Each structure stands twice: as C-alpha cells, then as structure tokens.
Length: 163
Image (tube, helix red, strand yellow):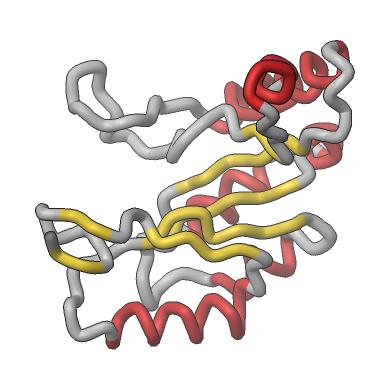
C-alpha cells in the first residue's frame, strides 16, 4: 500500500488477505484465485496483516475479512473469531453466491459496527430478476455500504452482460 501511494499515487483504504478461504474447492491447479484456510488460520493471518500494516505506518488502512462465498459461511467464520481478532478487522466482506438463501440479517447483526460489503455477486440470469431480487434482499437485510458485481462482461455466462 505504501509503495502504491509513493509510486503511483494510489491510496488503499483496505487490505483483504484471503478470498473465499473456508471453501474446500481450492486446489493448486484449478485456475482460479483463492486458497483454503481454516478459521484459526484466518484469525492468525488477519492479526498478522493488521500488525504489519501498523508497523509500516499504515494504521489508516483497514483489514477486511474474510470474503467468504456465502452469507452463512461468512457468519460461521465471523462467529469463530475471538474478540481480539474481531477488533483487528475493520471491514467485513462477503460474496453473494448464496443468492436468495442465507441469513443476511444474522450476518449484519453479528458484525454490527463494522463496515460490511457484498464484495462479489454474480449469476447467469439474463432477465435481471435474480439480480433485482438479491439487491433488494441485500439492502433490506445485509445493509452493505458497498455492493460489487463480479464482472460486467463475461463470455462464460457469469457476467452482467454476455459478451
């Protein structure tokens, strides 16, 4: 983050060290980003990232966790963290791949006081109805301060607009 600001004028507001970490499908050769970490490992990583940012003079950069694939996985991960770990996390990211399922309300209540992002959402419904339904559910129950669609254009059916 410090080098990006110094070299390119880019200022990071948060760092997320893991992507969908509790998922069991991450393999060395599956061709997609991510890596499996159990809850205890995640807690250690989040703490180490916070400490290292502070040591580098980057206390203003938030630590985000844990970007789980579903609302229910995110809730289970958050509940597994100690109060010490929770205090080191300033922002909670979650992916919306549970679609209309999952307890968004419980995740919101459990993480109260933290900024909450739906940091990745996508599906193949070209009608837009699933997107509209899930936006309404997220804003009504999850209360994210940011909502991110996975990718705008995609030729494999996962983008907002098929290309």
